[in-house]
Length: 154
Image (cartoon, rainbow, N blue to C red):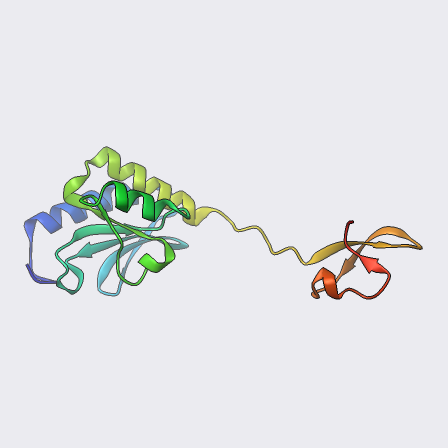
């Protein structure tokens, strides 16, 4: 099975993937790196049709920290570490080994994961000033480098 060659099994899996992904709000589909890819502002699912002749007909999805190692070691026939994005915790899911209900669960989880807004970086420090009590001071310096007389909570 070579990349790009017509394959009835791959086409059926792509139809399943497309049906589930397009049922989720804010989803768009685009080609990315030659494969159908599903976005919700960010990528949350990428079809893998024997990418680089690796033998997988799968979908790649992001996962929460720590999940990748656990699922791959527990179910190695169902999950794998995909190239490129695997180092960022993404999971490859063999589409032959999951039914629609299970696939929907994984895709919905990935869709939710990319929709979560990250907390803004905290740039303000509360410091104590002997004359004024506690007050907020903007500083990019670590607390250990604050001017003399100002120190973080102690």
